[in-house]
Image (cartoon, rainbow, N blue to C red; front, top):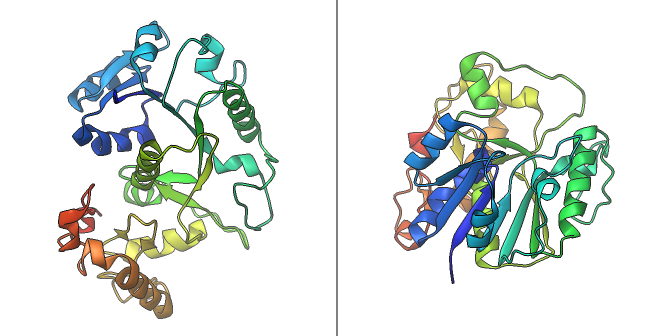
Length: 289
């Protein structure tokens, strides 16, 4: 099988997929609006295309897989569907990165993939329209609805470091998040085992308020995040008044020991017997802050 992935909008989430696919022999092409970003993509082994501005016909014909990461616009909707007819192209797999914002406000209630789409803001309504437009193409579509994305250089941790973090204090308000590496893991698994028509919600399974994370992060020397989606701030923490309640630290340690340590190790460095049989290798959390 030809393994060529075309990413429309090679951004933060799509970039996390590259280190998973390159070792498997994939050719990855991505679009960008920036010539500077195109040079960085080349350095990563990705074939850049400046788009809009370049004819995508050749790249679309060469692609066996298509990932859409570009956001819809208020005027034109999805940028690729607005610019060309895809009926002449054949793909083994198509993925669309959407948002959990399509569900709208449910006053703290849980939602799943079967929950009706009732977006409360324009951005959510644009995503619903884009999802519908892609579903109407008849292509082997997989929709990934992402919670708030975080990762290296992005999210609350980086905001604390650069001094731009803000506390949002609102009773009962919680935030769902997903690490870029976890998005990549799910997308790679979908590529390996396609289920056209499937919809996946992607988020960590431990929702917290923004106030909680901004309060506890400055008191942590290390951040442990497992590829299963657990955000555990329980290793080498300072015993200060800003630290989370001891019961939460104890719970975090137990979750990590029970569900994560077998691959990532008791110290979080990924050096375990199981690591020898895993691809990608378990992340070394001690190398990040």
